[in-house]
Figure 1 (spheres, one colour):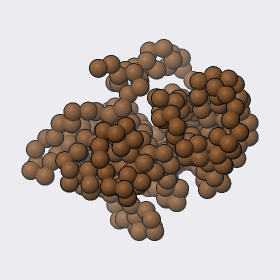
Figure 2 (spheres, helix red, strand yellow):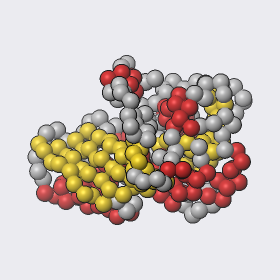
Figure 3 (cartoon, one colour):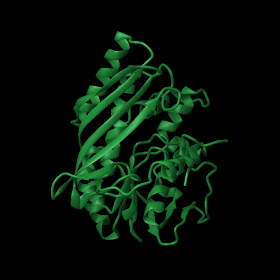
Figure 4 (spheres, helix red, strand yellow):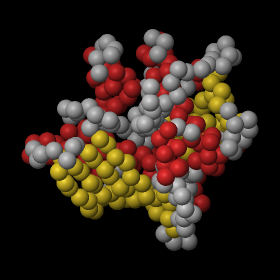
Length: 316
């Protein structure tokens, strides 16, 4: 267990809850009626920890809401309402207008209503609480992956981490790849069109915020299972693969793609979902019973990444 999750488990996950699902998933689940659950989650973005100073305020407003919406999608739910709490070192009208425009553009695209919140003075920090609705029979829990489930991943991995490396001047990229990767970092696009279908077909899911390895690891730990995944099948950005920067795709984080574990019998149905325009779904491996994650390279040998994923409290 990572230092961040050990902290949560030691100090905050202390008591039993009457919630359908409490601490330990992308969102908490609370009974709404006999057939539906409320999904409730919150994420905080702090300057210099989650975003760089001088980040475009429109993109920051978009991302602040998008990362929360992603948590609801990972539970198999539909986002409905959000509350915004923001601390500002000072009020700058132009910055606030652009931030607000970005936030509401995201809210409009994914049909979320902002219904309240709080403002205060302090270092720039944005916290959003989001509420969504989940059909009880289709709720996706990290703890429900089953042996022999297929593992599917949406989209392309590594672009956001590549964008961060570019902004930090750690890497040189072409103009077009720079633009594409920075937008992947600052303005993630979510896969809203597949959630209803994949919730019906899947056993479990999680969004990729800390990197593929770290987040798949959360499913494996919660479900007490293992996995075999194949490097040749993982949808890492081609430039990253070509330049032998595989760990960026495996562990870079901020992708906000989704991992699903799906019964093998539903493979053909997932293939049909993947034919939806602009949707990319890739099968990268399967769930095993041995409680270990094996990353297998093109020669059939185990690949060991140097980095296992992002952790806020990691010490080096």
